[in-house]
Picture 1 (spheres, rainbow, N blue to C red):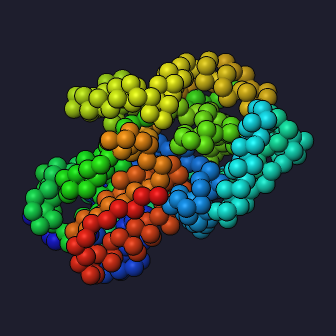
Picture 2: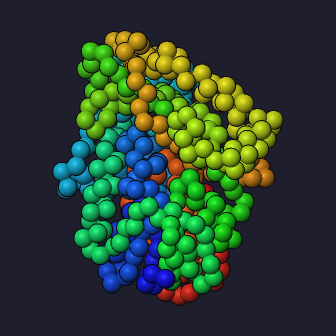
Amino acid sequence: MKSDYDYIIIGAGIIGLATARTLIERSPQAKILILEKEGEIAQHSTGRSSGVLHAGFYYTSETLKARFSVLGNKALRQYCTDRKLPLNTCGKLVVAQNDTEVQQLHELKRRGDANGSSVELVTEAEARKINPLAKTSGTALYSPLTATVDPRAVAAAMAEELRSVGVEIRLRSPYRGRDENNVIRAGREVYSAKMIINCAGVYADRIAQDYGFGTSYTIIPFKGLYLKYHGDLPALTTHIYPVPDLKQTFLGVHFTLTADNHVKIGPTAIPAFWRENYTGVKNFSAGDLVEILYYQARLFATNAFNFRSLAFEEMKKYSRAYLASLATKLADQFDPGAFREFMRPGIRAQLIEKKTLKLVMDFIVEGDSSSVHVLNAISPGFTCSVPFSEYVVDNWILPRAVHGAEESSIKSV
């Protein structure tokens, strides 16, 4: 057995890395190990994310997302500035296509104000001054603090920082199960720790269930695809987003400026059939397929959260032409035929309630004195990672590690 650790973190994505960073700041002498199943860090949600730093106006004020988006945006902008990492401070316009959507912009403004986000409603003429390509119906919402980073560069910087202060990161060490007394099997090794911290993303529910947590939930994966623009590049100066369906967690197809100022459109939210259903049959899992098809069939039959329409609509987005047609409703001067290359796909690990089939719309943490589980760190999880990790450490990990609290509990907003 490998030496005992104070904390073992499962998963070297942005949540696992940020949690380790907060832990070592709070407890500099702590012995911390991060276990990552891949040969490199940030190979799944983190490394495949858009890199957009959201500004905190989509979410109602009582949610953890609202609480941490504004703080997280500021923290990661500062992190990238201090370390000279790529940062595109381009801002965002949310544009409307009709009067109903204009009213929804007013709701987003209200939410932004309640959350402390810097947002303003602008006229169509003012929107054109901010971004001459934007198409809106009378009014738009402007978010000057929305930005883009390179998520892999941020993760790499955090990993380097952690290694420099003695945090171990073991690659090619997938979680294989647990024994008693917080002994876990990972890869070919066995490790023990005072506390296990589960930041395993799309597998977080399964690991949590090994510890008796997350039993009310399961993860349903959705595939996110982006198309890269390869034509003569118009002078796009901001992200351009549509008005989202406020009852859903998906923001719709939009224009994104990358950290290095390329243009892409997306993402999709196509129902996936196994947890790493990126391309073809790579990483196929028959167990995943059976489980996910069971829940998708229930979702389709009940049409929970309008799944039936969502599935049909999203499947059409495998068509480049259709995806481009949605995006070009938002902006002028783009050649639809120049959106040619599908970029590296991602998987959104969306938690749902097993009984009700409701989408879990906010972050979820469960745990006790021996393990803590981050069950739902969906978008804007990357943006929120620094303050969210502080919340997890200060409210879940350290109180239980210090006091040995035996009661399990749930945070669901």
